[in-house]
Image (cartoon, rainbow, N blue to C red; front, side):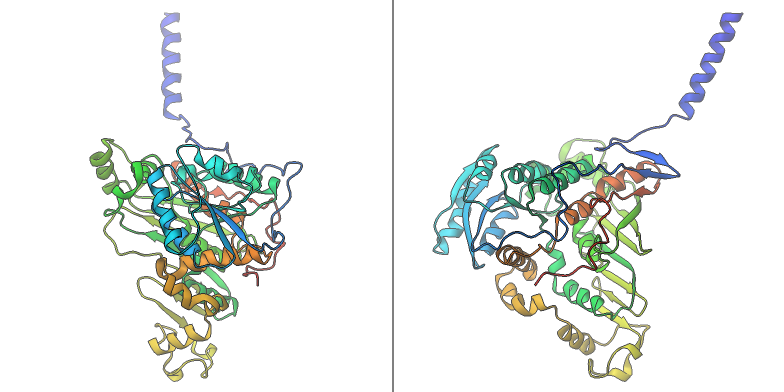
Length: 468
């Protein structure tokens, strides 16, 4: 009887424990839950590391570049660099030798000498060890970004990494810590911050046309159905099949972070994230990979609050048939900007000088300003960077020219010994949102504290700007 009762008690306890079982999601960095929020410990800066806020190096007469990854994005980058003064392309590397040979033809067609060729699984290591390389430009699949970047930085090279720069919080800290220890630049190649609308709207915001900016939105909504087969070895769909959250946030996230002066007077405080179930994604991975589940949702939304009480909304959707959309919205106390699906501005009429726009009497804060007024404002507030290189950028191309502006600015800053437009903290902040959002979703959209990669120095710079 006593034995039966003991068995009954144990069974009851086991049932109770199974009902209140606490599940944990895999995370690249341990976290705790305190006061209803998921928190990550920010590691202390190790001895020998120094902050890279405002970091600059001695001016370079020539920027000697090595390119790693010559598949989808790499050849276009090589082509663009041939138009930029003060550049030497000294090395090319890809997993496949035929891609290297193809990129060599870009150089020879421009009358430039061939670069050193590297290929295979570890060809990048030989490239990074070369003494005639200052900058390693990385265009490989996301999964290889950090290994190559860390290896290059350990060889004393500056690195520029295609988006996202990293795929996990641990990888983000690896970039930050290595760059701080080696005192080299680590920038993220986010082209959308140089888009003509985004850069003009940023200039307007910095001139006060929108008043105090309170809410911003960005997105990557792009039906990739026609493109999945173009990713070598199916790497991109494989990543989406395995990873939940906004895995490709930076096109929408980066430009709005600049509007809000993130880690230059404000910081990302915490986020909450939510997603739909996977329908199209699940069917796609079943058809292409023979797998029954897809971790990444058809649509993901992440909300972020800043220390100064501002709010960011970002969205991700690569699975449903929708028009391309990066959103890009700025909501301020005095005005509004919107790029997709309709490009336009709204202002309080009394805040717009009649000399700035035609049809001044016809302005109404309940609708977009007329097209001729919009064009006049876009011309007046064209960013100085676009005044300098906008026309040649449109001719060279690369997403309408913004790719060229991105590369031009990178070389310009290095040659003039200036801080880069995007630093390693931008790279980390914009790239870790995928894993942070996935953890929030796993815990029923619980808030997740955003790590401060600057380690408390986020307000030492007064506002974002492009170095001149």
